[in-house]
Image (cartoon, rainbow, N blue to C red):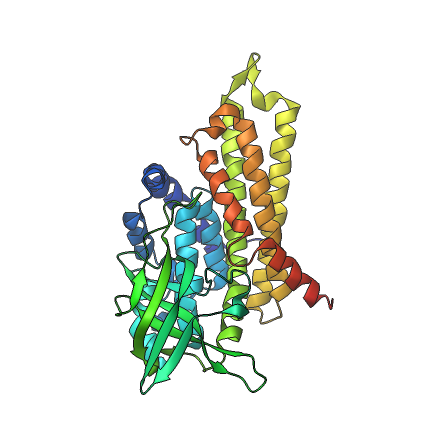
Length: 382
């Protein structure tokens, strides 16, 4: 097994690394401080084709694969996670459900704008009262003639309220199965649909330059043709989307962890204490060595999960392992990077302060660490 990148993959990684350093880094701190969305950065990512990486050229994509997306997410997150999660959610949660499950008409209508980055889409799964219990969905959709009438609410939905958000795909209860369980389906709700309300953005601990909202649906009517995929298959569909998305989140977490190494190395060489750089002291050397160890092993985990996915092999357990491990070490590295920086690590002018604030959500979003352990245990036969 060879985890070395091809020349094409290395070129992609280098180009995005340069973009992150030269375009994202100079502006992101101000966006983060002001809680504003970096539209100018998103536009440039669209021009680079990043939103279309894993999609076929027939839909306006770049004809790449999911691993290419993961490489890009890692490099972006080495500088900033708000920008990285904007791309991750736009692709794996926004456009991917339509690509995987949409009709020809739905793909023709929505994918060109989504894969170009001209528009964004959200994935309305989580609800205020359900959290990890996605099967406990309370939002309901009733078929009334040739329209779905949707009532309910969603929470913590990324990319759902920007000026360029085109739609949100919403999971809803659409009936009852013969065994008495809920029939869950997924429905496309375009932005601006009457009855669809986007609440003001959350006041968040981190990811402050990304877009996150609560959504409400009050007798919101959309055409029956907006059903995404087969009726009653919504639960299976979003499980597939989340399995893939966990690999992407793992890549993002590895990027944050590696960014902590980058910043700690830089600081350890510059900061003087007791007459020499602090990097000369073994206590600091060992901290940074352990941080590099953690980032490296987490990277191998998501590489493995992505390889299995692209080979058409089962990858649910490997995706959960990658997401669990990478999110854990991201929090560890953010904490240690802050310690290496001392008092300056607590100052927002230093990137590690942003990394520290951004890291915790990685253990929660797209499946908590506890959920990942459940998935691993079940896949082991427990």
